Structure formats: structure tokens, C-alpha cells
Length: 492
Ligand code: TXE
Image (cartoon, rainbow, N blue to C red; front, side, top):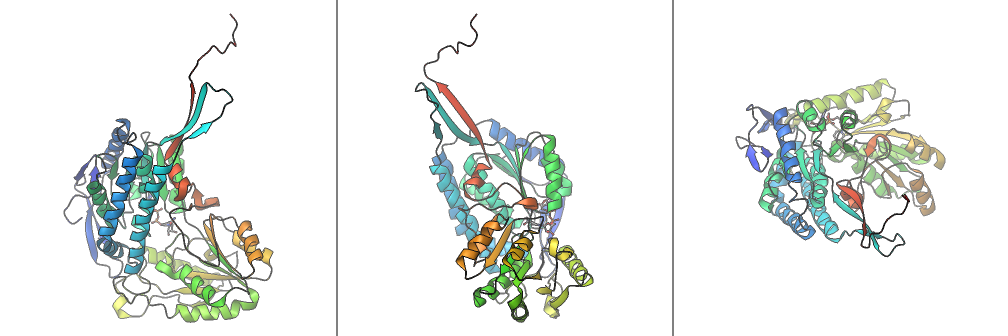
């Protein structure tokens, strides 16, 4: 960053081998936030080779779990020590409010603490095969070399959801943050070094997917690719990985329904539908972008949402009075604007927003107003495609079965919300929804100890929880006969 080397390969910091750099833009005002080294494909291959060597030399995978757990706890302490600095860097890079960035740093800290605990308490499984001379056991081993590719909406958080379990498992890795938001991952890698992560175990490269993707994913030395990002990129990565039968874990976003029955608690429903879609200006994979409201309350509910959406204070994330920040880039705002134009042309009714803020102080940033479209239906692309912006679409239902059908009518399946005061109905609907996380009378919460991931085209695999650790482990069955005797099958 700004003259210091940003690539960390085989235990040393270095600049790109061709001297290349990239400017990182602050989306709140369009200024250059930092200049960062841009790796070459050869640098990326060197990073994979370093991870391969560190894995194959066997020391890190064989580290006692107590030592790995202790290292993870040291990282957690360093994250808290540097929380303010990291949060400011995340806000500078993404535009999100400082309050959100601080929550992100607490989240990543909790993920390190959770995996420290999990790895220290995970045990092998003994299997009774009915022969007392056979010790049969199932053990977990680190998967090998992992390529970890993260997006720009939660840059450090998404990366840590991968790095923490990979380290806990004893794997080695190459991390590639989004080229749009690399700053916190660079700072965090310095903390990993300070905490004592051995050379070659974690390697870091910066650069675009177009430039580095092939070197990282079309690579026989890689055992697992864990990717969070757009569906189109996820498909390309899965196809490339298939050439080498490399394992992939994909988190590809969602188009998440938030179903509100007429008997739902009004105040918390309005509040959480609003937060669920407009937090971080909608740049959240689990954003509740599809309001599915019971017809009898829909008019009043949408009117109240619009009233409150118009009061949301959009502004620079560093300003403590801002409630949400800009979109991550001019290019991303252009995409969101295209979706708004599309919604209008598709016949949806624009209730509020649909424009950039007119405050001249925000003119240089990529801000966009919270936007609500009513009278939407499933034939519209704004209802079926991930806009990844502050856009809420409203669909209506009269029967429970219709609400379920609407909620499941998506190619994705990451997350959903259900709001009702009828507990039995709530449980019925939750079980009928085909989504990886379902909130009942809440929205957006998660914890390090519970799995996160999607059904359908939201991807495969799970992050967080025990399954999030299992992604980075191989399973081995060991059959040990302590009193060997002939099988006696062949008689000659
Ligand atoms: O993501 P990309 P983009 C969705 C959201 C957004 C859309 C596109 O709808 O509008 O995806 O966003 C790296 N090989 N999500 O284009 O390209 C890239 O450098 C290897 C949902 O910014 O998927 C970055 O590090 N890597 C999502 C990462 O992939 C490649 C969060 C994600 O970028 C690559 C973000 C390649 N060929 C966007 N091409 C979520 N699931 O939360 C790109 N990359």
C-alpha cells in the first residue's frame, strides 16, 4: 500500500514482479484511497507454489491442534487491538459506515475464536467393526492448498470466513481479495505474520480475476477453491476447477424473499424489512430484496416503508450521522441504475427513490437513494435477478401456499425471512422454504457457530459452523488390525 509491498509470498513481502500497481478508489468521494501492487499471473503461480511447498513439507499440517488454536486466538486479540484502524480502512475502501465496519471486525474476531475452540475440541470417530483386534477410526486431515477468493461487499469478513477455518484445519492458502477492496486484507495479513503464521502457510496476491483467475484456478497444485462472488464468475471457476477435479466451495449471492403476514408485529416488521434491504445500500448477499406482503396490509405497509426510506441518511461512511454509504463504485452504480430503468420499463410502480441524492456534497461519490418498486411480479427481471443495490420489490399474496410458492420461486436459495405472530404457521413456512438460512420474526442475523450458504444457484458448501471447518478437511478411514491373520479367500 502506498509504496510498501502488498504481495506476501512464501513468507516475504514483495512488489509485483512487473512493478504493476492499481489505484483503489474511495467510493464516497471518488478520490484515490491507496495505490496497491497488482500481481502478475506468474506472481499468483509463485504464491500457489509457496503454499504447496509449505503444505508438502508437512510441518504446518502436523502442528498440534493446541498450537493452531493458540495462534487463532492470538489473531483474534490482534484484530481487537487494531479494530479502529481496520474499521476505518474498511470504510475508506467500501464506503460502508464506520459502525458497520466495526461490527465486521467484531464478527471476524468471533470467527477466529470460534474456530480456535472447534479445532481444539474436535475428535476422531471410532467405528466398531465387530472385531476386537481391529481399531477402525475416522480422522480429519487438512485438505491441502486452498485458493480463497473474496468479493468487495464484506472484504475482510468474507475472507476471514475462509482463512480462519483453513488455518484451523492445518491447510495452506493463497488469498485473493477483490481488486476493488484489497486494503483490509493487506493490513490483516500483517497481523497474521505478527501472530506467528509460518512462512508459506498464508500467501496474499492482489489483482483482478481476469488477470489472476486462470493462474489460481486452472492449477493442478490447488486442492480447494473457495469463492464468494457473482454467479457468473462462480460458474467459470467451477468449470475450470472441474478440469483438475479440484474441490470447490461457492457462495454466489441470492434474491432473498422477506414474507410478511398480516398478523406480524408491525413495528419490528417495518423496521427489519427496511434494514434487511437498505443496510449497506443493498450490497449484501442475504439482502431481503423481495418483500412478499399479505394483500390486506400491503398498501399501508409499503406506504410506511416509503416514508421511512425517504428519511434514511445516505452519506459518507466516515460521517457518524450517515446511516448508509455509497455503492462500491461508479460501475456498480451504473449497473443498479440500469436495473431501475429496467424496472420502470417492466411496468413496476416506482414508489420512492430511483435517483441519485441531490445533495451537492455527495455528487463526487457513487451514492444512490433507497428505492422501492410496488406491483412487481415474477415475470420481471428486477424480481428474479440480483441487483445488489438499494432496491426493494414488492409482491403480494393472499394465501399461505402462495407466499411459499413466491418465496421459493427463485433460482437462488441463500436466505429468507418470515414474519407472523402465528408460531405454527411460522414453523410450517420456514420448513417449506428452500433457502440456506431462514429467519422467523428477525432478519439478517448470523453467528460463527451456525452454517451459512445456499440452496440452488446460491452455490454449494457451507461457511461457518462445523461444516465450514469440514470444507477444509479431508476424511480418512484408518483400519488397523493389531493381530493380523490371513484373509483365507484364496486356498492355493
Ligand atoms: O463479482 P465477481 P463482481 C454479485 C453481485 C454483483 C455481481 C458481480 O450481484 O453485482 O456479483 O460483482 C474475482 N477467476 N456479488 O463482478 O467478479 C474478483 O476479482 C477467479 C455477490 O464484482 O464475482 C473478486 O475477487 N476469480 C457476492 C471476486 O472474484 C475471479 C458479492 C468476486 O468478483 C474471476 C459480490 C475469475 N475468472 C458480488 N473473475 C456475494 N455472493 O455476496 C473475477 N474474480
